[in-house]
Length: 113
Length: 115
Image 1 (cartoon, chains in turn red, purple):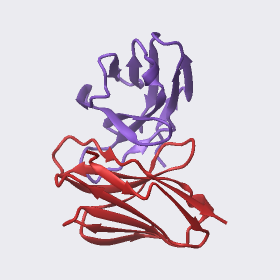
Image 2 (tube, chains in turn cyan, green):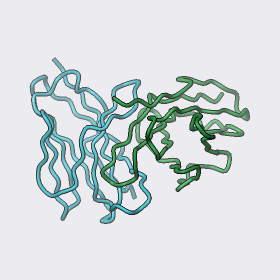
Image 3 (cartoon, rainbow over the protein chains, first blue to last red):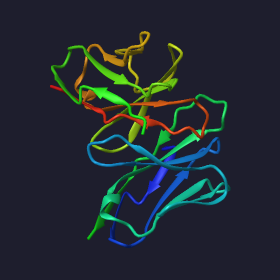
């Protein structure tokens, strides 16, 4: 079973709209979350992390974590065509373990004008 | 911002040949990683490396794979011999430390095509 489940697989939103992406960890030992974004032809780039229950906001991006359900969401407000990319959720174990973030399969986001 | 450089960007080789993928991590980073991505989809962990040693390798890290970082030089992934299923984009990453709030910095990847 995949340790990290992401949904939806693909998403299309209009420019200026809200994009919402989801991620769930199936292993309670893996509850430290990062969101990465990968534009075509590039490597993933870290967007933001979230480790505590509740919301975390960075500019147009808001992450929400529910530790009880190990579910995290990413909301992109006022989506721009430049936000079109592959979005990965990556999870890792509690500090002290060998650090090797596990990535989900990604959500492909298209923001159309 | 900090950059990870990967050389070459694309490598085409015949099955059975040896290939070396090169990575220049962020200068003060201590932990290095290789990930494999097929068809622009999931990033699969291969191996991580610290202080001259492999920390952990996944099931995808076959016996034909090896990594090293001789002092002051590139962090390399060597595949010998290559197989058709090794065709993929290989990403190198580095991090300053290994605690869970560390972000990984990725290179642009090396696209390996095994014919």
